Length: 226
Length: 250
Ligand code: HEM
Ligand code: FES
Image (cartoon, rainbow over all chains, first blue to last red):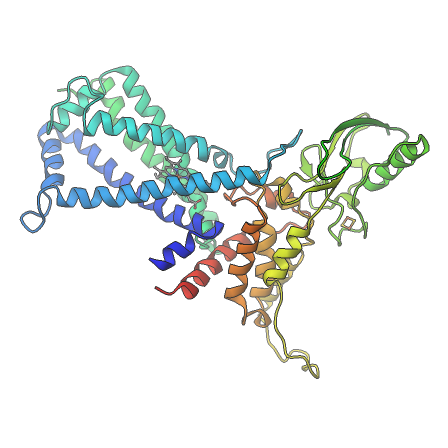
């Protein structure tokens, strides 16, 4: 723990922690996406999977035990990532108080300019998403435990489905720069596999993007119905 | 050649500044950017105005003092040269040229285009040195160094501390500078004893000076007159993780 907090004392260490917490989120997204894709195997399967998450490991693990442990890890990673993003952004703003009259964009990655605002968009989306699909306050006809019906019902409005697609644009763009950046941040940018980093980041971002948007698109086009 | 210059004028660190417009007439295409400014200054002095203050020394791209933002690019449009090595033939006749000082909280403007880059010196003070036993000199080649390491160390040692990386960085971070200094010592056997205290001390000083946080944008590498690679930042990051791991205990 002392090592972790020591990292949080330097700008570089903060970034390393952002890379680690961001990567935990990437892992979560891959799992989440795989779970979502089970919707294509039918309502029964999907509901069973959702239920399974809640009772995983029983009786060794209490009901919801696995899910909550997992949620806690992801929550700590998320909150940590956002706090560090806020701290580092504030530091960088303070570092240049007078703007240039003219400034060319020299960076080699356009996506890097959208990390902060894209990140805020993701934060807003995550809150909406939880109230929509997990707790149901923002869902028109939410039924506890009826995962498949909630999914299809929740995404049947084109506006909401469009919002999900837009959010995935933000998430994929963030991940694209993030995954590329991560190797640099933890110092694994050896020239030998340099060339592989960008294609790897593009591929991962595309898989996440298409994997996730397949659900709202399928609901809108009637491939997934009640 | 003729140019219209918009030059940042500011009398001192605490007073507000602004752009003044000057016409630069009959400029030879073979003049360096600084020589062009010298000529403009002669005119200003002749007319009883204060000349534009800018820093310069070697005028051959090795001292690092001549940095300025030219049309939104540190050291101007050519790439891989310092302002003193930029020639007017890199512009077109009649061009408008905006000239600004480096903008960073850690680089206060002293006057016009001259900024105080003392923050970089203090980062060096914090760890940019090695400890050696002095005495009779060693035989040449007594310490064998891999060619690859020697070359990399030389690449890093190219840094002239001009501050273009800070100027270009959207976060006003001096990480490329710090990484070059950390790497050029850390790659060589003579730099090993302090390798892990050096990186932590230098990064801590970097943060303390009020430079921003690197976000792997890469603008620094594009702006660097010496072409120093962001790979050195990755190397610094790795050394910092190891250093934190070693010093913090558990
Ligand atoms: C509220 C939401 C979020 C905010 C405000 C946010 C903000 C940021 C910022 C400012 C950076 C550093 C930018 C840079 O290095 O250029 C970053 C990096 C990163 N983010 Fe996020 N982010 C958020 C959510 C996420 C999510 C959901 C994921 C995972 C899918 C994620 C994954 C990453 C990764 C992998 C990095 C790379 C770290 C590095 O630079 O090495 N972020 N984020
Ligand atoms: S005057 Fe020395 S580098 Fe330009």
